Length: 172
Image (spheres, one colour):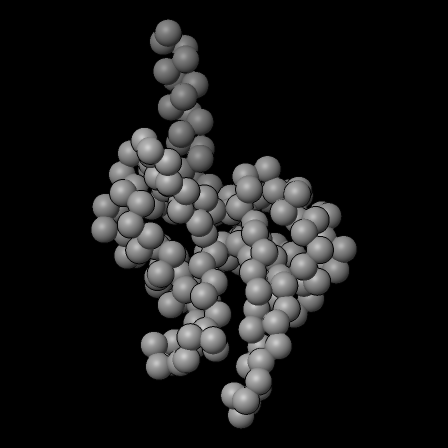
């Protein structure tokens, strides 16, 4: 079973610290020393804010992911107990965005900078949470949230929650 990150809207203050941490986690070490036009500001989650609530929207890493099923280029795959987009194969067709029941996928303009940094080309690709799979420390959003609104949901958490819900519905 895939794991995923979820945020408690009662704890989220909408500070967007999670988005900045995500960008830093997925960027080169030189992000703070680059010219603005060379930076791929690419948070893989989006904080939605209304008058009464704010909450990050993130991929649920579905086991039977519709986004992966509809991907024409096979750019979305189940990797390390999560769903990951292969940016090299993505053609930016938006089919995965339409298929995602959580609205957790958006498009991002990837800037590919030449080695001499004299030019860059842009390519539209799908973008979504990848659980910071390349980080030994786990998802950056979970680590940096000042209100501890995030938590990682794993298979056992789901089993316990289902069991508790069944118990409470029997008592009612």
